[in-house]
Image (cartoon, rainbow, N blue to C red; front, side):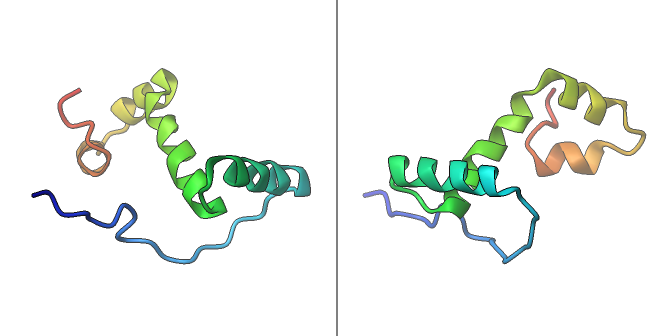
Length: 76
């Protein structure tokens, strides 16, 4: 038997400033997917790790070992 584990186990409240248009977009997408606004952002922002330019930037940083471990990029 596999037990269900919390998907977002280490969350904390944080404040970002978003335009009204972006807030509405996230909210409508949340309604569409049945997720909360926070869950939509959590899921969507993980896509940043697929941005090749961003990965190249991380690889170019002098002390990138910690960053790579945090995001599971250590083998790349």
